[in-house]
Image (cartoon, rainbow, N blue to C red):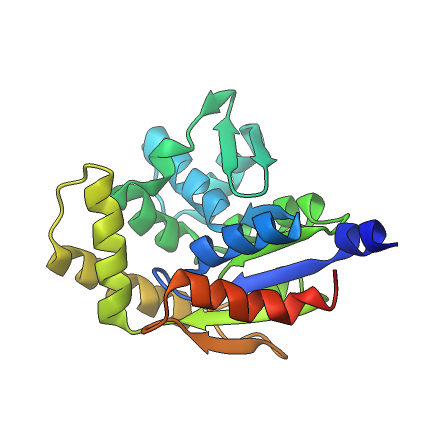
Length: 227
């Protein structure tokens, strides 16, 4: 019986960039023996394709045709997420600053959001996952048993992302990261299509002064009754 419950359970973790939701979602998926699903990877893949195609990233018809014509495959696991485009593994490229900025741009377009929505719902049809993004609890999986909204101050979120980029060998200043993140926050919250917001019924948590271990423990207690 417990196995059946685990297979059906859906947990969503939403929040702005740098709030710690990826770390939290991966930890919860691993601890609860659930799959990890990240919506941002699909928007980053769309941006990667658009940049490679050298077209207009603000042209919804061109992007829709590009996405429809290109095979995109996903391999979700408990704490890893692999994505291939036309057979090419682009997982490592998805975290480049240029891809992050343009992912936020293409995410404002309806055809792109519909493409991502279809992909995510197909992957989550059987449940058994922790889904992380910006509209997972409000739009993609409104039926989720547990919804978490994670936030933190802009300065702390930018610093976290800067450290992540430094570790990856990306030579970018912390001021640039903060500026780009502020612009991305504005786009995410003001876009007409599924803007970033707190999902109905979500548990709202602030990770500004909390370490990942504490966030994991708090959130695992929220989902434990459903396992």
